[in-house]
Length: 302
Image (cartoon, rainbow, N blue to C red; front, side):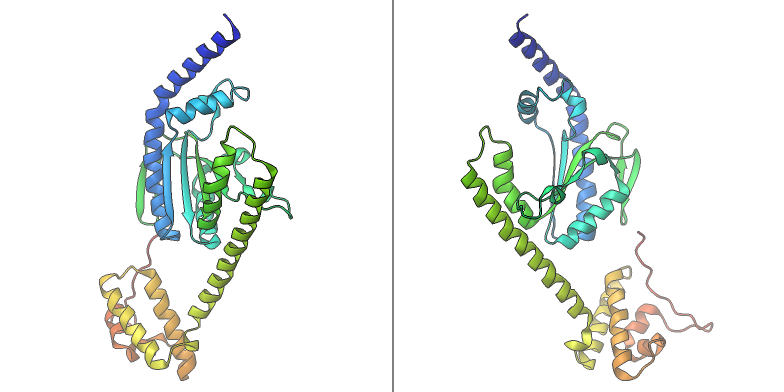
């Protein structure tokens, strides 16, 4: 048998092998999509979530191009299922990454933060890549639980986490150049690096503005009068009547109460006085009982 015939036989064998396991990766992609969507809803509400099993054509192309690197691609490839979370800010990237690192089994030898590969004077592709697997049983994100069947547990998948601007550069340049059959001319590489530098600077500017806005938004007295603070507390209290587990609104009411306390001479340790001063809060938290306790909204389980 010639070398070409041997390769052809090996190639057909790998295709058949992948076709046998492909349904499991299809199922894994569906489970992963649910988990990542719930994760985005919790930590990055406007994030874009993408998941997919590797297509047969993509697998076929990869085993041809990578045939010198592995003789058992079905078991060696770590991206037969992939997921991607595209966030607005680096703060959201860090929140998503923190959850993944705490709740997924991670193959650290094959996971990488691409930023760490760039030299101080280099600009280019930026993204966090995790090679993960799920534990059998169930997985909970906030209040949502997902069943992880034995058929997909321990299968490896790649999860990428990056910002919109990082994705814009990657989608236009990295995916095309990395998967291209030819080498990009140096002049084009330099232009792409220049664009990457501009987008990285924009990402950092967004992060700076976000931090300033967050700090300013928390300082209610800087932009709200006492009457406006009380009106906002009443509005949030009314919302809480129909959504008593909304921790975000409950936390904001607490911060607004502290603003009133510091601005009106009321003691910060006297929330009941503030509650009585804002009638709707009394309805939400309940009137003081004979024992002196008041009912408060429960926090969401985490």
